[in-house]
Length: 376
Image 1 (cartoon, rainbow, N blue to C red):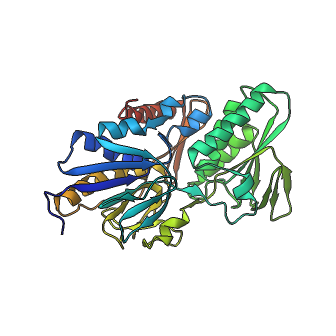
Image 2 (image 1 turned 180 degrees about the horizontal axis):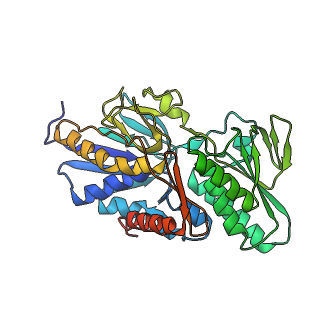
Image 3 (image 1 turned 30 degrees about the vertical axis):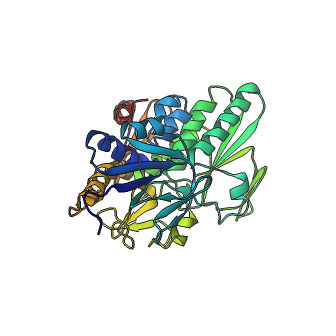
């Protein structure tokens, strides 16, 4: 067993919301004999709460991204920009794409998730996934530039996925595009017969009507079978010529997680206990989308990653100090605020829903307050 006087090497894999909060907390409550490292494949971590409004043009890039090297520096942590491609749990090493393996005593994983594209032919090659965000934003900026350069040229944009993410993206994209052109047709594909199946009836109906009012064409009960460079084909035979396709379907985990030997749920997410600790490897912690809390299934939503930050911080510090860990229990119900791109927002709480500019002002205040923790 490691002595308290020995240096503890903690590696944070991923720059997600939970890790941003942990590093901010560590800056204020540091521990002796602890070495911290942050490994991320990007220097700028997007804050999911403000990203759709950035797409709508309501926030700048800087306002919606956390400067990870700066955050690491403030927490006295080393920062490495690289992509993890594997985990050697016997040697306690993270395998990286471009640098030597990164050793650890304890590793915490917060790398988010990506939409599942592997089940649909051509989706991986020709559709733009909503995550990773840097890839998504690069394609969005390029498409915006094309529209701004030739606003009179007709174009078709398709979004696959009619959950909260796809619907919010459609509303915010529509709001931004209409500023430059009235020649972009937006189509939203949803394999279920209704939008947002996990939300209440009022929310589903209201967003259905709002999208139609905004000119978004809805294809409900249409499962996409194939994506081609210039076309989307559904299982029903419906075919739509497209200029760009955005993929916002059910979340998935990278396959190296399961291959590493970590216990996972049926979708490949890291199975953790009430302490946010791997059920198979106690020296591994996980939070945010990549984690699945045993006995407490929850949707993949940023609100949980934010709430897990402080409990994760406490348990990592208690691990170093050799103290008993403290349980975290995710809230059963949570408030979902969906921005509509026009400085208004919809609140969804169980079966209840409400739409108002006042909700946008409240959401804006919450989001700005969160980002104010992380100075540039």
